[in-house]
Amino acid sequence: MERLLGEADFHRLASEFGRSELVIATRAALAGVREAVLEGRVEETSFRDAIASIASTVRTQLASTTVPSLVPLVNATGIIVHTNLGRAPLSQPAIDAITRIARGYSNLEFNLDEGKRGQREKHAAKLLARMFPGYDAQVVNNNAAAVLLVLNVFANSREVIISRGELVEIGGSFRIPDILERSGAKLREVGTTNKTRLADYEEAIGAATGLILRVHHSNFRIVGFTERAATEELVALGRAHELPVIEDFGSGNMLPLGRYGLPDEPTALESLEKGVDLVTFSGDKLLGGPQAGIIVGAPERIQACRKNPLARALRVDKLTYAALEATLSSYVRESALEDIPIMKMLSAPASEIESRSRRFVDHLETIDGLDLTVMKGFSKVGGGAAPEEEIPTYLIAVDTSGQSAQRVLDRLRSQCPPVIARISDDRVLLDLRTVLPEQEGLLQSALKKL
Image (tube, rainbow, N blue to C red):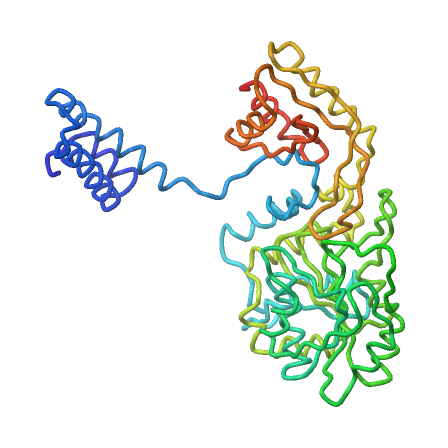
């Protein structure tokens, strides 16, 4: 061990990876050689070769343990808000804001006007006030945290009335009933999976009732023989019994989806204007910002949330505020369609995707064994928003001689950066709607390697 660590190659490894890690990796490599010798798997000549190659073995091991596991990739699936792929990519203004704030100190909790300690909640507050006139807002680390905080503030040890058809499971096996339980609230289910009438809510209200909760159908649709109480009806019921009505809005779309050929759903502001006391939604879905949970409602209710001890545990850091403020600013300045990648992807007409796809294929048409075909298809919104809705698009079907679709998919995923695509009818399909323009060259390189 000491002889090896004294060699020039190992000195360089110590400088690059640190002596402690080098010793651990070298000891493991020597143990492997020793085991092979004891088992009779190494001759004298191969033993010398094994010792000589330890530096290379150790370098490979150290490099593999220090490389980040979180890496950028190319999303060619056509799913715009892909939960498994990091949801919304940030806008350039948001990226610039993160870099600017991360580089040094900031006034995260410092009041520049008064020269003393301030409150981090002020960040993003002015922009949210512009987007939600007359309302206040609280930012926490994700929408599940927003729901947890609201329930703990307004229904701790009390009943929360919710339709059975809204007891959904969100990403990562987190379920609304579990969040209810952890908040200290008590679940009171009403109605049935497909039908919950206003009378069902009214019959459940009693002395132990804390609030009425409505949950957006984020990841599924119930179709056919269905019935659901209108938001305005629930608001009127809540007012009559002096109960807050809370809506877990999920996707947090700020702009009407009808503009992009999708069925219109109420925006968060529209729900508030109908009388909902508080709405919660995600920052990294249709808003197109960083991971965050945003609570919007009457100032006195938001103030109650701020005073709750959980608010400190669920608060966000300076980088989230930086990205969120830049994202909200794009909406306030009415430049969201130009700035925010999610908005660009949603609003891009199929004809634009077709033109991109045909130009893309033209660059690769001379490669032997690679056959690319442009065809009509559909993209999806994804991410707990409009789960069944499809956006017309154009796809690139990939065919390589002698390789199955699954083999092509696996090889694309092993590239650097990885390319994530999908299979349909035994063909790999690429949707440029979700491929950032600056990544097209990377995707072309990955296809050439096939």
